[in-house]
Length: 323
Length: 259
Image 1: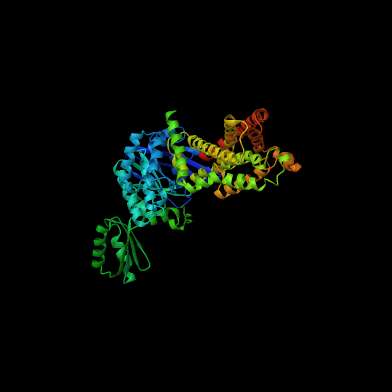
Image 2: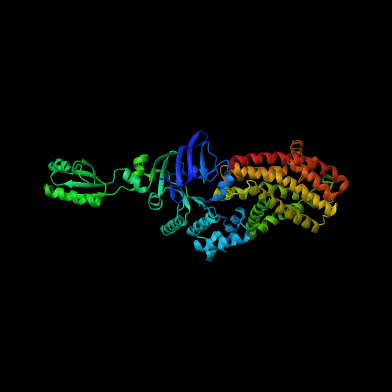
């Protein structure tokens, strides 16, 4: 695929006190996509992200952001990126508007330019009505909106989001997802870390599953699921002795990837259930195999995660609440 | 240069805004040293203290210089606290991901702490004036006191910021802070002249930069230029060395923390 590369990470390593937090990471992020770093806590997602936003120097390897090296051209990198930190990086005593004004000065915007952008951003994240209240009066969702407005103030080419919906209620999460999709529609490249599988599945164009500082797998959510072998149709037959007959009949049929006999029936991996199910039912009918029970499973990202890391994402140590 | 100034003034404004939102905290910050030390302690020991030992007309006039420098000490040692919180809640990362000079955040903090400290020193001298302590060296003497205070404050603030960048948790920070503050005061000439101290305490107090600062501020308030000048000259040299050491350590800690 010939797409513009926004971020190029090559053999990135970061070692803390002899512990390899990130171990030989290489990947590319394409311009205009939502790229996710998915993994349990301590997997190396945040270390990777902090390296990309120039806050950490890699032990070895390089990261290039919009063609600029993250170490030697850190100043240039900082002008093209926006960052939304994981913690509630909010000064409780400042108002929403004052946060944006402060950042406006740090991005060296003129007063007029800053005022204009701040107005637009407050409208975008629907915080105009609360812009002049101290941030300590904000709800969790409002703080997150302010966070995002802060990240967008420099009009970045790439926006980095660190666990954007951690600890938010369902409605706020859906809202944040909407914003992220809207940013993509505006042509902004989004790089986010998450340890929510549903978030990665529904939001990211492509994602890398990271565990133990290494990339376990990388692709679109659909690709990753298909790589597991597609959807599974499980049949339970009334007469167990008919299993081999049906197995032989179904093997090699179109839309069916593989057929495997189980104790009570068959596990059939299918490319598309729409095409495979009629074939399966028709064959069973024709051969007189009575089906007692039929179950259809679509692999979820959880299955991808388990397949690549050997455990469920929820088995990681729960994050201490960062208030 | 224009950018640099824009960054520093915006960051300094943030500290001012924060303080102005905490009206009570601001009031107590300003009032505490003169209330606790100057008014209570000063008047409490007014008769207990021997004016011959103090070499001063009364204890409050002796204590004024000590309270001035104690204020510099406490403000300086606490100067890194806000950066510590910024580091812990991620605000510092947000600032550092913007294209600012790495030193802007630190410089803004120095400017703010120095300004607040100077303001407090002026308030303390004003209250002392009400208790009859009239600085012998006049306006120029007060300016010199502010200069000494700032020179001492820069080093202390640098220590505090270095600690803020180095500690693992803010519990550590406040433990060290609490441990440093009072011994620094007792092992100095703030409350009692060195000549009146037990030998081992006066010995230790000689190495306390606070003693040097107080010994220069006190004659500026009590005696006059002729007695003060040698002390002022000496304290400037001591403070230059002190600041150089603290700034060097602070820069190292900052670079280690910020990559």
